[in-house]
Image (cartoon, rainbow over all chains, first blue to last red; front, side):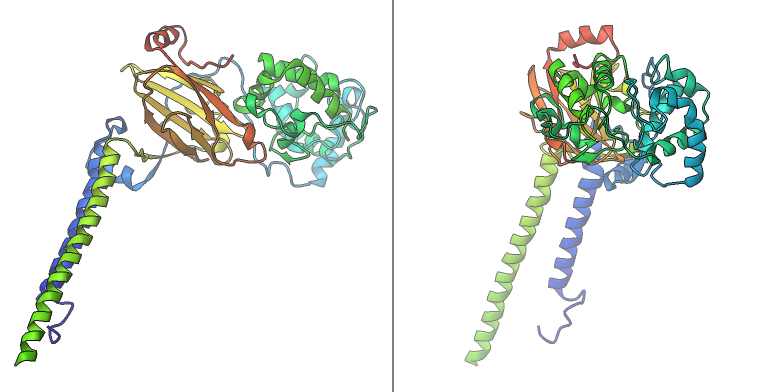
Length: 263
Length: 187
């Protein structure tokens, strides 16, 4: 036996082991790539080649079915965490000029006591998204909608960049000693409420979520109530409505006053 | 002379042992392949049959995952398709309603990071991966309420992320479906 070459077809051990291994591989491939996919009627495979491709994981774009279109305007902003994070001095300069018309409600420095949002230091992507939603009608306000309707895409980016550039100014209600409500720090896991801070800063920031420190309590409360009732629907895929619906009136009150007192 | 006999005897023993061990290892491989095939056919494991892609950034703009198209849809053949998305930190729809004793297809994806899709009390347990559509054929035996927690750490608010699945009577579902084309149990 020792004088016989090991890797030779004349060696019966070699022939049998390679043959059996190949047979197992072929049978497994037939089972996995053809038989199993075809045994799933809901896959609606076009044939053997389709079965092999889908089982091997060849990606394909999801079929664009004619689903139900919304009967209201939804936000068309494509939100990413990199959006409008690059500082552009020209944009800020243009924004400063454009923002003069915003000053009557939002304050010359982006801060006011008019219960309108304080925009100084707000993330540019947030201000841009809301302006765009006012313009498209995804968010409606008798005051803001006409202003936004006249703005170009670049105008909105410039104004957003300008307000992002302004330093945050603490509100008159600043009270950093105020204890954070449970809903802000830990949320209410039993009611599908993540901590406010996991998106709105302090703990983490999710793209598109505004910085809430120093905002008017009246404004925060009104927005949460609008999300809960469905009067405001420009949050992408219900991300804020899902939360606000589950909040109690008391919790809404607590977060509104807590964030107002924050820097 | 005696050593010659010993040698051929030893060779025969070695050949027999080798053949037995080879047979045993082939049988083990065969059993494993057969087992995978059996549980695949009987859906004890549900590997996804297709890889479908969907851009997580533009789910809300067009396609089947726009807000108004999410929820349960009664198909012409009597089966039900449920579409849902996972996002930081909730599922939309927040409450899914499905009929019992009916073939159901879950189609879901993620709008941001990897989320988990697990329905308590059933063997439904998969992942929602941004960029890919999760497609899962299921069937609920009896009416009842289930919780659907995100079982894949998705960020600092992960523990607050879960949905509900309400399995209702087939006839009751049919009545609901007659009035509305996309059903949820969000109040």
